[in-house]
Length: 318
Ligand code: RIB
Ligand code: CA
Image (tube, rainbow, N blue to C red):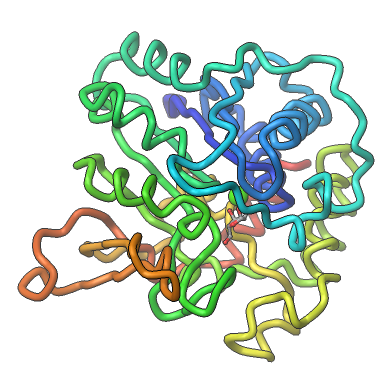
């Protein structure tokens, strides 16, 4: 099976860390062209350091890391360090990686890399605020449309919100960027909370991943355990009994889709984002009827097979 050429844009972040670990491990399936980082869960300097640190633990210094934009397109940065810890990786020691980022110009890396590959061959995974991607689309729209697919984590329909009652964090942090991406005409696969809340890192998952014994597996298990230990008042409260099973694995779902698309169900949709209202900033309106909201512009992930995600983690963190 030929390798999937992939760029991962992220804001590590404890669940981004598990997504990175999965992507770094799946070297028999993914040709990781590079990692780009954005401000999000924590500041850009920390998300970039964290990406380099996770790369080191995974032994994948062959994959370049390029730092991106330090703040949203127009809004002030808003962190999610309540969910990720002040350094962004839970209680993991914030040591400096030996190898740092290759550049601080992720946008240029994206443009050069995408333009130098045949059209419709590179996939882009996005697991943080979409600031870098929106900047790419604004500065080189034709380049962005050369991408085969953008698989992103963001938004919510049935599940309400997690940073406010009506918005999911990645969209809330940079709603203007999300608006640009949703209107770009790119081939979008969108993992909202509706999908990621179906994939929860139970205690059994944490124990099974820990038992793999590799450094990257232990790091990933620590990330899951940190999320599971967050105070209940912080976590999603949609279904208290769901909370008892474990914290959702938002970002790993994006990589799992690339490795096992059959584990997920998609529905064509029209997605739009609120950028004006203070109360509902970042809300995603996801409509499955073209007659109501206009032409479809994305595929919404409606179902996720949690056991399939666990199997991929056990296989690729070993
Ligand atoms: O709402 C979940 C998303 O916000 C995840 O990507 C998590 O890392 C945070 O960035
Ligand atoms: Ca993230």
